[in-house]
Image 1 (cartoon, rainbow, N blue to C red):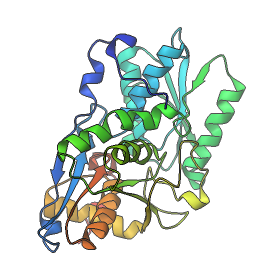
Image 2 (image 1 turned 90 degrees about the horizontal axis):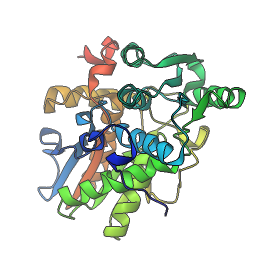
Image 3 (image 1 turned 45 degrees about the vertical axis):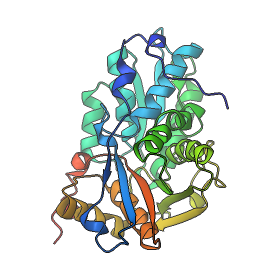
Image 4 (image 1 turned 60 degrees about the vertical axis):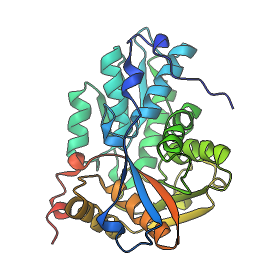
Length: 313
């Protein structure tokens, strides 16, 4: 595998990579009270990244590799499709590095995400909300084809620097933070980069580790950032054979769990984190012993406008 290590000397801002990754691994407590005492469930708190989500990891690696390859610089705009978080990460680093950025994003993205993108100076092109992330991909592809001299298309769904970021950081962090005791790793499928990179690293270190993917249970769903793979444009970096088990999560179950995480664990997280918790707890409920680790991609602040979620009884 062609994997480049993050190196602050290759981008024009000393020390930036040191602030990405090394996020806390924290336990679920009250929600696991019915499990066997020998089963533990942990999550990576990815909102500790400077851009507020797990997407900082691939965004930084993609940008750095683009500098190495000469794709960025001299005023060329970084272009990509996004459901929100990846764009915020790109825009965060773009503002710091002087890289102009343009994003195709579904108009259904939360107002908080759109406001953050514009605050960071991003050019935002809204796409048909009924077409979801796939519609945004098609718009970005067309923009790149129409104006190749203006845009460098980062293509997070097919860029190997996406999954490699997790191979280089998320996987080693989980291995170290669990003292090599992780038995099950659960991650949602969007670009699939988190599962691909982390899963590959953990399997190399721990051949018996179980890799579990999670996705929405239907083509039309309310889980921003996640893809229903059977009906979606499959990411170029996605290898469906990596996960030994594939779980589907209902939107309603993820919403209910997101509220429970806030009220029972004091964890104010996003909806994809609620979905991850549903899947991780389903895995844990079938074990007599083990260490289950999942990813909570972001905090709940980008979802505050969805009052029906937070004010549910």
